[in-house]
Image (cartoon, rainbow, N blue to C red; front, side, top):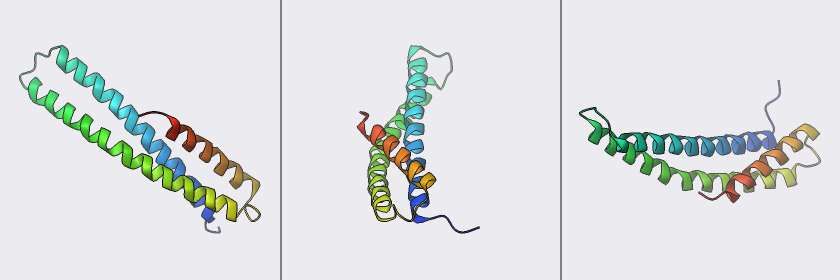
Length: 113
C-alpha cells in the first residue's frame, strides 16, 4: 500500500484539530455543569477543594483553546496550499475530503469562543 499523499496527511491533520477543539468545548460545558452543581451545595466534606479544582481545570481548558485555534489556522493554510499545488495530481476523493475539511475548519474558526 502506497504511503498517504501530502494532501491526505494535511487533510487528516486539520480534521483531527477541528475534533480536538470540539472536545475542549464539550469539556468546558461539562466543567461548567460540575461547578454549578458544586456551587449549589454539596454535602461532601471536600466540596470546597473539589470546586477549586474544577475552576482550575476550567481555566486551563480556556487557555488551551486559543492555541488549538491557532493550530487550526496554520493547518488550514497548509491544506489550502497543498490543495492548490496538488490539484491535478490528487484524486477527486482526496480533493473532496480536503474541501470538506476546509469548510469545517472555517466554520469552527468563525464561531466565537
